[in-house]
Image (cartoon, rainbow, N blue to C red; front, side):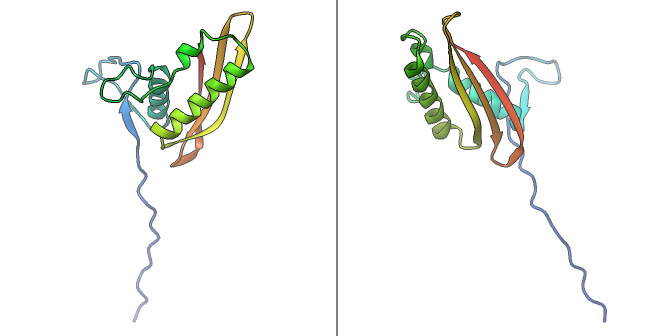
Length: 135
């Protein structure tokens, strides 16, 4: 009698899908372009960070107040507040994301705050995406 075959199986890979941000038409069979995986997460983070808290009627707590902080005195205290806002918003509204690094730097000459964020998907830590914003 022969021994039964033993199979090694791997779990199916979950693909993250979402609407591309900003919305655009690439002319490939539909009006709205989709993003997948880390690109979709990047677009979701951009929507979250650029949405002013209180501007969505059904989700009044969604977003951040970093745009309003752009009018605060430019300094390390404001940079720390921006950093805290970003981390709180991501932890609440984007649980699929791991923040690899977050740097918030006041640019005194330009009167702006530079935000540099590196993220990975929790289901694929080997791939990262960098996001750079100025407020």
